[in-house]
Length: 226
Image (tube, rainbow, N blue to C red; front, side, top):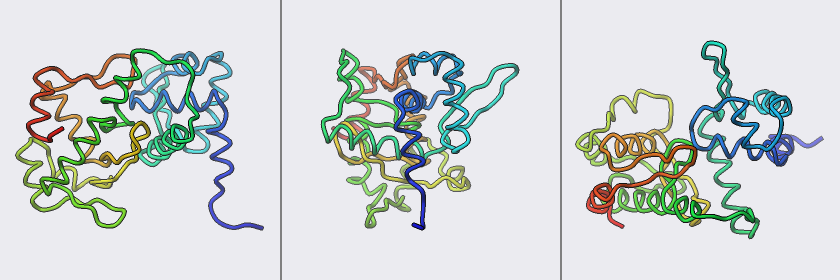
C-alpha cells in the first residue's frame, strides 16, 4: 500500500465542477450562504448542501452559524493557496473558461486572493516591498526584515499584533493570471486592509475585483512603484 498524503481525495473533491465553482466563489474571502453558493455553482440548494457537507468533512471549508443562518468560508490560507496554484496551472495549460467579459481585465489588474491582493497590483506590491528591503527572499520563503517591521508600523500596520498571531507573517503565492509571485500571509492581508482603510481601493460588490481610486493609484505608485 502506498503511504503519504492522499491527494486523490482532495483532487476528487475539487474536480467536481459544482464544488470547483463553490470553492472559487469563496476565494473572494467573503462568507456566503448555501443559497448564494448554489447560485454560483448552478445547482439547487439541496444539491449544494450535499457538496458543502463533503467539503466541510474534508476541512476545505468552514461553516459558521449566525442566528438561523449558516455561512461558509474557505478552511484557511492553505486551501486558498492551493486553489490559486491550480488556477495558475489551468491558465498555463490553456484551460480557461469560455465566458469572458469586461471584468476579466479588472481581475487581472487587481483582485482579492482569499484575503490578500493579487493580480498586477499584487505583483507590483511584492516587488516594491522586495526593492525597499521590507521583505527578503530566503530560498522558497519570504521573510519580514527588522527594517520592514519598522516600515509597516509607519504605514499604519499593527506589526506586533501580527507577530502574536499563529498565522505566518509572509508567504508567497503564485499569481494565476501572471504566473508571478504576490504576497500572502498576515502581512499581505494587513496591507490590503490598510489600503482599503486609507481609501486607496475598495472591493467591487459580488466580485473578487479590487478597484483603486485615482488618488489610490497615485499613492500606490508612490509607495510601491509600478
